[in-house]
Image (cartoon, rainbow, N blue to C red; front, side, top):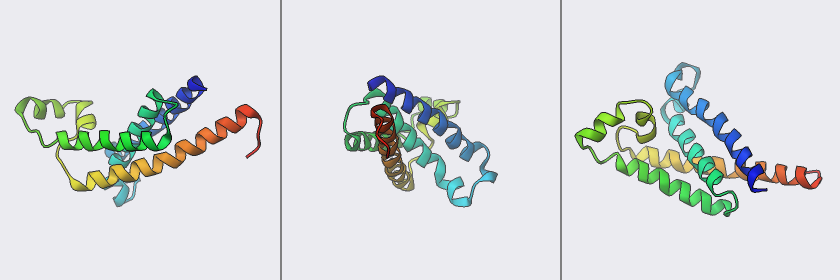
Length: 137
């Protein structure tokens, strides 16, 4: 069960990353709302799926809380503006991972991303569990 969940979350992460990057690198294909906030929402969902990959048996609500805390910590570190980290943020992939400046709106986007990832994770796990046991949803 643990390995199957890890495969599931690997696939979800691999689907999530290009969507998040596309909001930054090809914004013309998205609505203005997604252009502005989509990258942060997809970042939060990716962090959620990544933490679930690491802890496949922990309760989903705990994973959601941990994910949101990680996102907030990443956002808070953007308040630190030492020259070395500012220079690091202007390199790939650290600019994407660390971000550039603190914004309160990002904290809201992270909450939205976690709230989106939670039912996706629950639904996928239910489908995999039902498939493994032969139960029809």
